[in-house]
Length: 217
Image 1 (tube, one colour):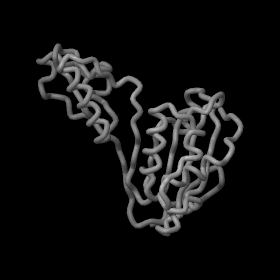
Image 2 (cartoon, rainbow, N blue to C red):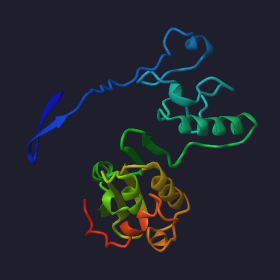
Image 3 (cartoon, rainbow, N blue to C red):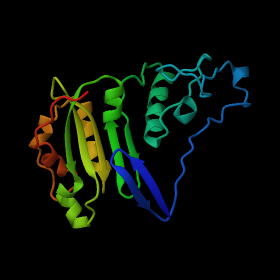
Image 4 (cartoon, one colour):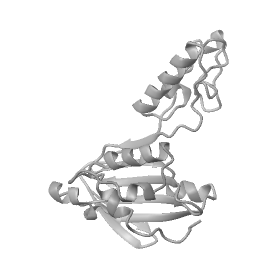
């Protein structure tokens, strides 16, 4: 199968054996009696919840995809944490939580925080660090050099705004950067970390030795 693409760099050809079509998801929330319980839906058909995952009905909570949470198992696990605490009288919230995105394709795609498109859409100025995965020594032991690493750094500080990896074992360095972001560690705090060799996370030290580009809109 061959597909001809057109873009800023002209025409390209993509060859493959399979075609994956992702058409989105529709919540299965209609005609199950939610209105009888006083549970309202939002404009897209998901159960309306607040930051505590409480619905419009007293003492009723919703979690996971039916409540419009990101369609990841780890997001649903954290929803359970929030609901379980609130059922016991706590006040846990989903506000400002940092959720990771992983797609286990070949090679993997993993991301946490902002990507360039989102940063530009929000008007957030950033500096950019980027490196091909071929520079990561682990990819040589696996003979999988495809892909790249990309980190967005705040324009006026060393705060990490986001990190994207496309390559073998991409979810591993992504998790390292996510931990740094949760701990509010600047990108320079990872620069001299001594990661085990050879691991994919070790590639972060090579990425962070570079100087970020000038601020970008």
